[in-house]
Image (cartoon, rainbow, N blue to C red; front, side, top):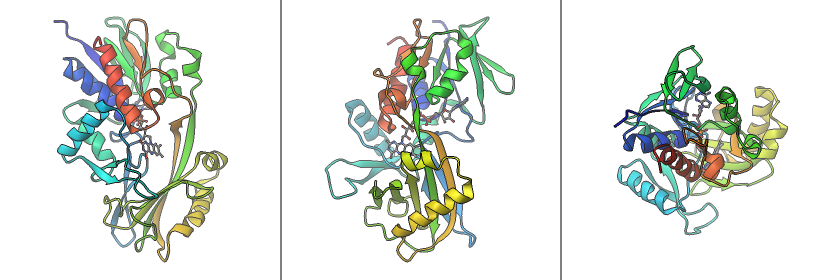
Length: 321
Ligand SMILES: Cc1cc2nc3c(=O)[nH]c(=O)nc-3n(C[C@H](O)[C@H](O)[C@H](O)COP(=O)(O)OP(=O)(O)OC[C@H]3O[C@@H](n4cnc5c(N)ncnc54)[C@H](O)[C@@H]3O)c2cc1C
């Protein structure tokens, strides 16, 4: 049997699922991510207060829902492994649909998925180009190169496109035009519990925020800590604000949800590629020879479930169906 090697760009949900799918089909896989850790938009932060208390806050994805039967089977497996659990069944009353979270913060799920894989973090991919000895050569920003029979790109599409300009492949214009909504967030550690009602989440509560999540009520932080996400309109309008101005505006708007609590530590965070505005109709896009595949949440849906299913689809395409 020919030894086959793949490089996966991105250690978010899509990339890790593509890598696991390929590894289970006998491929040798290297996953590269520019971040310091795995997870991408499955991001969890620790913030220590001046008096030494450490809060844990999810600052990307907050929870996930399940629709597809294949995804449901995976969620059952992760639940059995103690990695995820049900948080609640809605934020304005019980709507019957479970919202799941990862124990210890959403990054924990991606850490679990990375186990056993060759994942190289703090590794910025600079370009993908046709190889001399293999189909593709992946160029890292330190000048080193990795040869691969196939490459799976899972960075947000504008980034994937710029990395593959040197690949000499033609991509559909609709794919190239995919843009993303932005999200600005405020991660706030409190001196006492917030006044947000159980189960601790508010969706689109006003004209500033699309989401407010109480990480203590969610069960990932022993220290009171709330994640505030500004909606796409507010985030676009304030994208170029300096951090002090933007943070002051969000802190002011957040006050309405804190009751008697005061913010004792905070971080202001920006996601440039938060949510794809347009979805590609297939779960991934591959070149004619199926050796360069584009995947991510812009394909199977702008959520945790979509990213997972797109990654599996990409790995399956490369492995031959
Ligand atoms: C603020 C926010 C809130 C959200 N809330 C929810 C929610 O509540 N529920 C839900 O289901 N979904 C939510 N989502 C969406 C969900 O997080 C994403 O759909 C999913 O995590 C995307 O996974 P992905 O693998 O496609 O992309 P990503 O997680 O973005 O992974 C791409 C990876 O590529 C890496 N990368 C990029 N360029 C390079 C390069 N040149 N070299 C190497 N690596 C590179 C990045 O570092 C990143 O790790 C939210 C997203 C955001 C931003």
